[in-house]
Figure 1 (cartoon, rainbow, N blue to C red):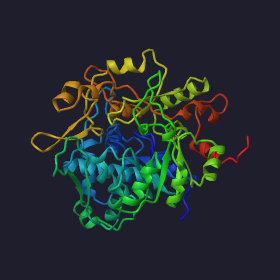
Figure 2 (cartoon, one colour; figure 1 turned 180 degrees about the vertical axis):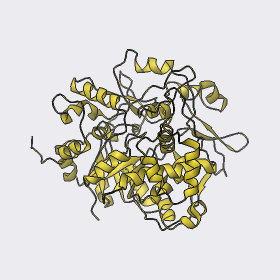
Figure 3 (spheres, helix red, strand yellow; figure 1 turned 60 degrees about the horizontal axis):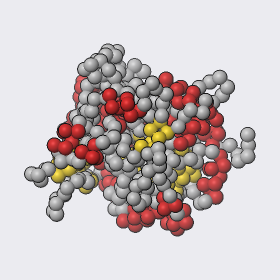
Figure 4 (cartoon, rainbow, N blue to C red; figure 1 turned 135 degrees about the horizontal axis):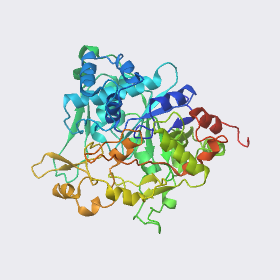
Length: 476
C-alpha cells in the first residue's frame, strides 16, 4: 500500500498534540500525537477548566460512560483551578495499576486520537517510548479505541508491540514483559491488559494499525523484522541530530570538549540493508528541506519524518511565549541545542534547547528541588524480596541510593516529566510558590526555523511547513 510522504514527528510531552496532528493529517500527511505522559496532560487540561470544551466533547464518544463520570469527578475543575493551586497528582504507573489510573490512561489516549481524527479522512499516528513500558498497554488500547492508523515506537527494542496490536485487534488480552534491573533466573515481571474485561459489552471490533519502529541502525531493524512477535510495517530511521532522545553512539561513549556524545561512521545507518528488508522506511533528523526529501526518495525511502519545524508552529502544544522566544532566537542566529548525555533518566542522550536566561541551564536545575511525583521514566528493579520496585536517577539522591541505585548514575539527571509538562503551561506549583521550569527539546534544525517566518512575525503554521517541504527542488 502507499503511505504519506511526510510523517510529523511525535514529540512529547504534549508538543505533538491533537491540534497539530489534525492539521498535518488534513494536509494529506501522517499527523502524530505523542502518547508520552498523556494521562497527566489530560488530567491537567481538565483541572485547567477545559475552557474550550474539547476534552468533554471527546469524552461524550468514549464507549464506557461510567468511566467518564469517574474521571470528570476526579479531575475536572469548572472554570479552572487557581494559578497558585498545585495540580492534583494522578497515581504513578506500576506493574499493577489501580483501576482509576488504568481508566485515566485509556481515556486520555482515546481523547487525544479522537480529536486528532475528528472531521476529516486523513491518517493519524501515535508515538510511544519503549522505555515507558508500564503505561504502554492502556495507551495502545485507548488509541485503538479511537481508530488510530499508525503506531510509532522507539527508545528501545519494541519486539512485543506488533503482537500486542494483533491481540487487541482480535479483542484478546495482551501481555508485555517488563524490563527490570537485577533480575534473577526465573524472574518474570509481566504487565497485562484485557480489552473485554475493561470494556465489557461496550467492546467493538478494533482496527489493527500499522506499526513503524523508530530505529538508528539496520541491525536493530533486521532484528525487529525477523524476531518480533507480529508484523512490522516499516521503519523510521532517526539520526543523531533529531530532537528528543537519541540512540547512544555505538561503542565506548566519548565526549566532545563541550561534553556532547561523539557519533562516528558506525552510527551512520546502512540504507542498503534497509532496502533489502523490502519494507517502507522514512529518514529523520535533518531532513526538513525539499532537497533532503528528494535525496531521501532517491535513496529508496518512502519519505521523511520531520519534528522540530512542527514543534514551534502555531498548532503545536508548546506554550506560546516559549515558541515565540525560540523563533526569535532562530531569527537572530542564537538558537542551538546541547546533546546532554546525562539529562534523561533513561540513560539515552537527550537534546536540550538552550534558551536565553540569566542563569545557565545547569544552574537552574541545581536550584530545582529533586522530586519524583509523575513517575513515567522510573526504572523497574527487583527488590530483595523478589517483588518489583521503582526508582529514578532524577529523584532525590538519597531515595535512589536507598533503592539500590548507584549515586554516580544520579549525577546530572533532570526530571524530564516535570520539565516537559511545564512547556505546555502546566508546570507544577511548589509549596514555596515557585513553578517548575520549562525544559525544551529540539533537533539541530531549530537553528533554521527562521526560514518559515514571514517578515516581522515570530510565528508560522503547520501548513507553511508542509508547503515548504513539498516545494519542487530548486524552487525559491
